[in-house]
Image 1 (cartoon, rainbow, N blue to C red):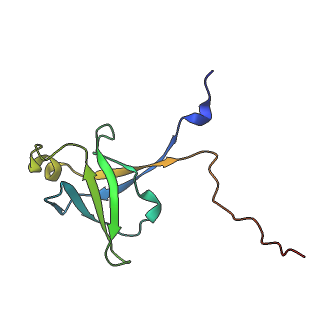
Image 2 (image 1 turned 90 degrees about the vertical axis):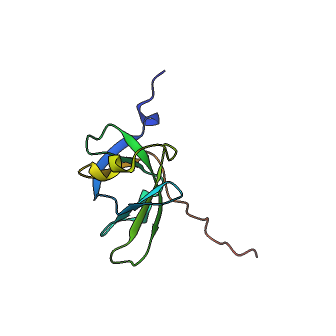
Length: 111
């Protein structure tokens, strides 16, 4: 039986631009503007929106203009110029249908 709710929906891509640098721990660093911390773990793709390069690993730095760290899928054998020659990268948000925030039960006083 096929359930459509089991397939995650893809939201609007968020353009994050070109990377600043590649770290020794095989991460790409981007400087981003206003971005939500809810993107942690989201897929990062190239400009063609077909090739996944990695996932969002960390968001750090000043609130106004933070850095975004993307953990690359491949080990360090890919040429660095491949990442810096691409026009831009984008984050694909996944909307998870049917998820609710955890709300604790009301505290009831025992009599």
